[in-house]
Length: 200
Image (tube, rainbow, N blue to C red; front, side, top):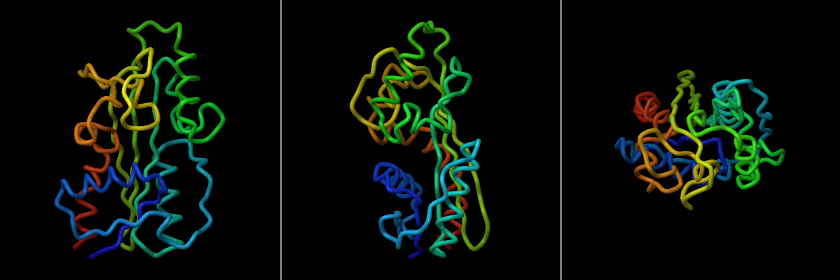
C-alpha cells in the first residue's frame, strides 16, 4: 500500500477523492488527511489562480511530510461578476468557510442580473507532488446561478449552482451523480493516470 496525503481537513473533499479512487479501481492508495500527520506551517493561499494555490498546498505538505501529496483549490467563477468570487470563493463574505454568508452575498450581488446572464462555472485545480515530480490538472463544471438555494446535499455554493443541462442544483444531486459531473470529479479523473503510476 502507498500513502497519499490529501492536503485538507475537509472530510467531504476527502470522501469525494475516496469515491473517485474506488471508481478507478485504485485500492492500493491509503488516503491520509492533514489530521493524520504532525502539524506543519501551511502557507496562506495567496496565489492569483486555483493552480498556484493547489500547487503551493501540495508542495508544503510533501516538503513537511515526505508523503506524496495531493491538494485542490476550487471555487466558483460567475460571468456577471467578472469571474469572481474565484480564488476568494471560501471567504467571499470576509469570513472563511461561512457558506451561508458567502452564498447570500453573491445572490445579493446578482439580484438585478437577468437569468440569461447568470452563467457560472465551478473550477477545481488539483496538484500532485511526489518524489517523481509535479502534476497539475484543471476541471470545470459549467452552469448558472439560480435565485434561491435548493437542496441540502453538497457544500459551499452547491445549493445555488444549476449545472448545464440539469433541472436540479448541485445540492440536489446524489454523491455519485455529483462525482460523475463535478469540477473536482473531472480534475481528479485527469489525475488518475499519475495516481496509478504512484500506486505502482
